[in-house]
Length: 253
Ligand SMILES: [Zn+2]
Image (tube, rainbow, N blue to C red; front, side, top):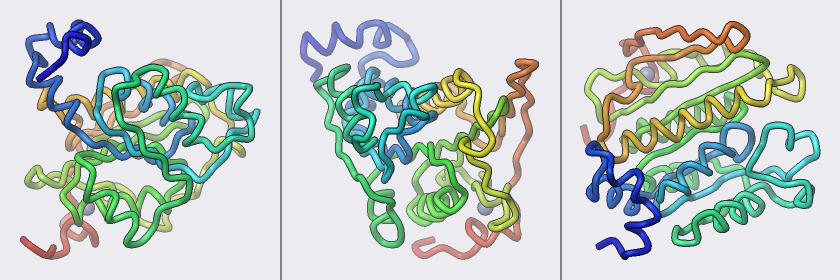
């Protein structure tokens, strides 16, 4: 049951016929793992919190640096030096004190990662390195957890949703081979500030859609953004029958 305060706070989305009370309750009852509280994680976490996702688990082992503030809008100048999860939790808690926010200020791997993914209803990958992306994808496939994946560098961005619950849907590793890609970082390559805002906001949008069953999420589709021309390209993605992650026989299937 929603309180009067909740009915007011969320009224502008409850009035959407695709959402209504049921959609809002689905969000309030959801637990979402946000990995990375940088350029993508900032807008993603802000919209998930403001829209009323009831339980956010924030993961980041980094601290706020002055060079982050150009694009990582969940942090502030006075929090330079603080852990990113603590800084983000402060912003999100001020925005929506009703939701629960857990902080994990270390890099998750191995069983701890699988454990966190299995407890989440959905994972938003806002990380900046391939090691984490591949590990998250493996954990999501193993536990049947939907994964909203985004990336941004320079003026280029991309986003897709990988949902192992959807038959024949591809996973992240159907697209990329481990070790094949160079690790590009914003520190080395630079990044246009609003680009991470665009992609991170879209990650929140896709996460909310999947959680409440609204519309058609980006499952089996990859959107590529050329920020200089502000042009989108959509690619259809297929499951790779030779994919070592999602085509391998899984336990309990
Ligand atoms: Zn795959």
